[in-house]
Image 1 (cartoon, one colour):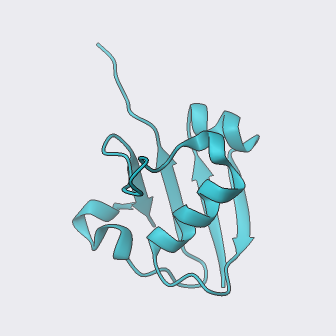
Image 2 (tube, rainbow, N blue to C red; image 1 turned 90 degrees about the horizontal axis):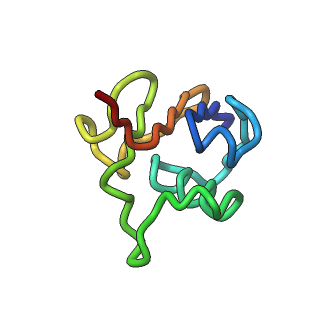
Amino acid sequence: MELDMRFFANFRESVGQKTISREYENAENVGDVLRSLSEEYPDMELFDDDGTLRDFLTIMKDGKDITHIDGLETDVEDGTTLSVFPPVAGG
């Protein structure tokens, strides 16, 4: 299946571009995709040392926050777009 990934702020710098498309033959859920991305781009630091997704990240599947779906177990299908946002601060 082919997925599109969009990256923002420092994640865009880590990947070197705003959007990438990748083929994932064995990915069943968002966690599988993010683990694969973490291996490809280790400086993104998506996971803590114990393998849990960092709390401050926002991951969107087709515009919906995965925390309001099934978290890392959220299914992915061909054509899914995942967006990866770093922490946002401002004032």
